[in-house]
Image (cartoon, rainbow, N blue to C red; front, side):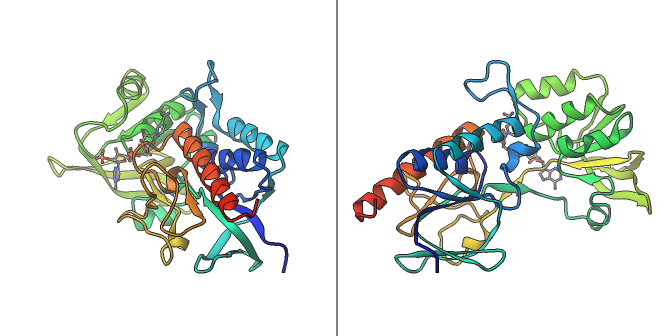
Length: 312
Ligand code: NDP
């Protein structure tokens, strides 16, 4: 059995890397597991224009690379592995990697973030990666000069529709209500983009395709009940996210949607020595900057915990 780690950080978005920067600078020698989506959701974002310190904006993946470099510079060990099981029942916390290696730690910071939600249609699964995608930035390139559809009406959908409009000939935006949830500035951007066509009160009935992939989608107007087909080769889903907290459901308190519950004004969970940060515990703000803020809180809370136990 290897040594007991001071602090294991699970997740590598803004929360995880910020926790790592603070923990490393506090001499905690953190060990960070990146998880299945290294860099988290910012890896599937284009320009980040609202993170302070970047007056001209920055690309999400570049920002995460910078976060990682900063964490490593102060001594964080980064492992590109996924934690698939935990046991928080004892004073020493245990986590297991996907290759079944057991890691022991005095403290654990959870920054596992959230993942894209899907519509739940069978055709969505059938055409996954054959035209169906939840990441415009990753896959938009494949649909240059083609017609695509995007479902959703939040900031993600608005941002991705705008991104796709620069690559694709027409973006058909399917909005299930008669208004959008996205911030006003993002809505205006979408509405003022000539090649984005908005379909109000519209839900997806089926994604259509053949052996080569997506060929269209059948949509239904929720007011009139009328169905119609839109010929598209790409179908993007941008309807929100689910917190990546399934492995904690037997040990940590969470709300009905799976977001981890922390004690007020802290990152403390119901288990001493286990701290939560970022989108895995924040259902309200869900911003890179707030995730980074709660990552910082988690590292400070972990440091205080370890010093109260005389471990550091
Ligand atoms: P949201 O939860 O904000 O929005 C989800 C959207 O998808 C809603 O419009 C919702 O419709 C729609 N939707 C949900 N389920 C379905 C379904 N089954 N069929 C059709 N439509 C559906 O998620 P986002 O990912 O957009 O944003 C999450 C958070 O991240 C927000 O706080 C957002 O502000 C933030 N964000 C900020 C960005 C920025 O500042 N640059 C960029 C991206 C995200 P309805 O409205 O009817 O519920």
